[in-house]
Length: 637
Image (cartoon, rainbow, N blue to C red):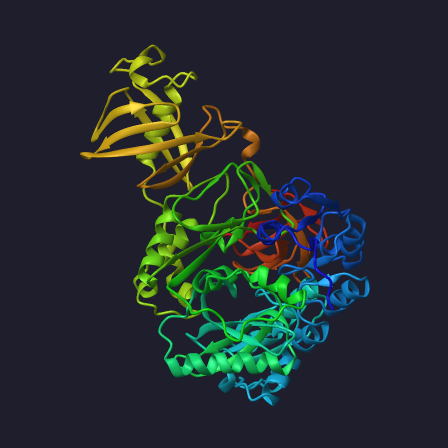
């Protein structure tokens, strides 16, 4: 008989660790966190009853060190280990080591993890179980008729080691790049190819199984809106599926679970073609990032059920009936307009209003570092209908105050309010078609800059403007002037305390300015970061980050033309073959590959010309703004 759990260690970090601790507390369990040195003051550490330091910073030295995690559990007196998702969650050897150490493993049997660990082996198993599959393509014999192809890493997930190939001439380089990324991410460079389905839907089935022969299929989820093959918006149930297709997906997922004697929570993922044909993609032998939408619709706590199943409890013969619709959006610290570039730095404010669930590993004042995924939070809305859930989620995100880092918030709001999404016309090519429109420049920041200038002019005691006019130069012939930049545009504001073209100043305090703009009353919430280098303005007109322009620019800010600077802190994982000072390069040619926050970023030649300097080498860690290389543009004929 499996002993009852009294103390739980979570072998993970961030929002999933915080989320698991929440359930553990509700069940009366003691909680133990592990943390790397950069995570010493992270929210998951502050949330747990006890925490154990894993010496080092990089995941390979900390969260991926199963021996250190098990030692931490034994040292802290934990009797069970929950892996969360990512890191060691689908590592069969780690699961065995946990069990061999006398600890309870909150996950499926190691044999089931092993059977599904390789996508190629999993597909063979599913074919034998009668689950429909896409036929593999041998890259060595691929022809133009096989295009487009999708290259996928056999191990791991999360979009790492994936490439779409539309030209046979690009296949060799894509295989090399996918394999190299797979080795870096999973330690396994095996890559396979299959047909890339244009405008397909990513639909998955949540399953939960006990040790007594019961397997639940907990409905479907649609995860089609993806960037870089990573999910951005998910919902349950998957809208618009015919009942026959939904039932066949449930049956295939249950068959997949039974084929490997599964136990615990898992997800079976399918690709559904535009004409409604489903194909098995993979089985994730762990909890999914998007599990909250299933929890909302079925009224369940999947983590609590994982713990009970691990203790040997039997599930009821059938799950509860689902109700309503749930939608989840992943809020990332990234810039979608700049090739999804991840952001690092201090998150000054994270405040999301409304009747929504927010799972996060951050609070205001925390730092987003370079070593981990840039997801800030998952925001989930549940309502009786899909339209109501989508509307509630979009409204909550639009009203959120997120200061300090560029995020994908505006993209999420635009996606949720897009006509195609509203009509449930979902497929994995959504952002290929609409990214440019969804990342257009934010609404004009001129009025926001005026609000910032008015707030800045109020004396520091937060007194209302009308009561503190002594702090102003109220001379009409000599208005005050302030300059700000926002999203690359400079705004010069000339202002008087109470009178501006098209604008009436109703009140101004240091943190709230109320203006009448073209006859409409608007409230502008104003916040400055701790060193006054940025001003954050939130209103119904949008959110803006303004940078005050100094009167005398720092000459050190100037850089040599053609300089390639590191767009974020990270590690140089690759330099283009044969690249050296004196090399001729062409505009847009990839010169360097930089890895940061679990993503790989290409550094491209800004113009055709000669590489006059190369300061980056493979394996080098670089800071934001570091000079990587210099390209001297060739003269135009």
